[in-house]
Image (cartoon, rainbow, N blue to C red; front, top):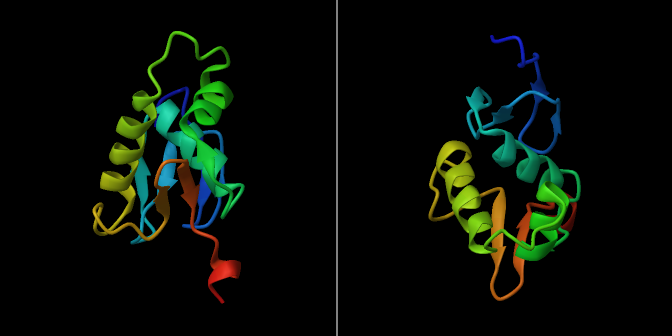
Amino acid sequence: MTATERPSRCTPAICESTSTSAPCAWRELVRTTFVEFEILGLLARSPGRVFSREALLDRIWGDSAYRDPRTIDVHIRHLREKLEQDAKEPDYIFTVRGVGYRFRDRDAER
């Protein structure tokens, strides 16, 4: 563990940390970049809520005027590769076509 990392307590539903570790489907810690962890935390704290690329850019970087909205797609792809059992059939991070991304809402599935 480096000086900038802190222990984290994570579940697939919610991340409770400021470190750059995140949950995967097998409940082991997975290293993420700072931006990946911020995106995951934002989505996981609001399950079911759809965030547009622009909203994610604004929340993560503030002024997103100099960022390509497709940057979010790359970070989401990397998160899925790290967290999902099958990145092409995600269980946690979903694409809402033409709108953005959302995190799984277990309450709505019941």
